[in-house]
Image (cartoon, rainbow, N blue to C red; front, top):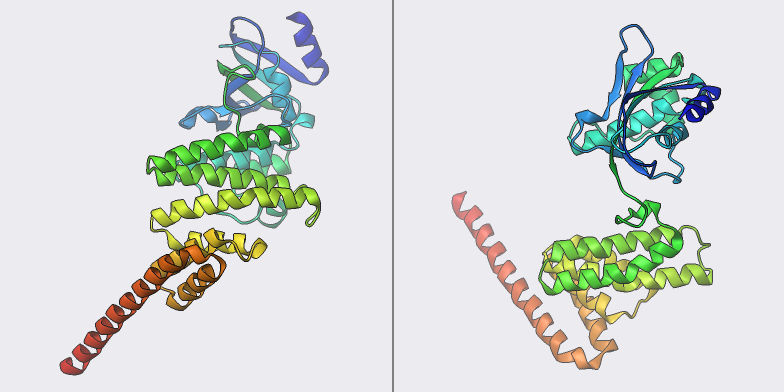
Length: 324
């Protein structure tokens, strides 16, 4: 233990154990409290204010690297106080701002802001006077860390941002299977969430590739079934505009995709865009003759709806003239 303390002191970090922990030093989920090194020990941040503790996965390049160094010296259930030199804290104000926004949104405490990073700092400050003071007058800070829970690698479901590209691709079949099972159970909203997660993963991966290259094309093609499944979920929920948006995305790459055209046509009916719906249905009939009878019924349904709407509008107009 003495060598750990000595190594920290060489970095300008001084550790004081407040409550001894147990066992070895694995990866941690941690609770944090930050105070100034002034006589009043002014509290800057305290994660115990929020409903759940902050989590750090070691080795994932957390923006405040010194926190990883501190955690690696701790045991499970340990509470320790670290006095950290200001040279390690250049990013603290920005990290604190972001964490306050993340946790604050969960509690409905944060107003939306469209500036970020150095732009926010230079143009309007960080929106928190105490953090603005730290930017103007950097100083050592005291971090009180509590190692609440320990989860070893492989024992928990990783969040997407922590996955390697290979792990992200490996997650896609599971998301598809789970989404399909939820859809069969008519849990459309939950199924849509699974498909949306898969779409998000593929979009992250495609951003790393050059548009038009074979790798990019392959990733874009993999998105198609997830986009169509997501659209079907939204259609089942009566949420028509996302259906139109996502099927249109499919049709930009595959203009003759019958499933996309059919689902977009039904969504256009729901959103009452009758001409757009007719155009899509007619294109479906041209591409797949086996659906001709189905399309005929759908077009007749649009005609009936149009007549009903015309009759309602006529009655409303008559009412206006009678009242006047």
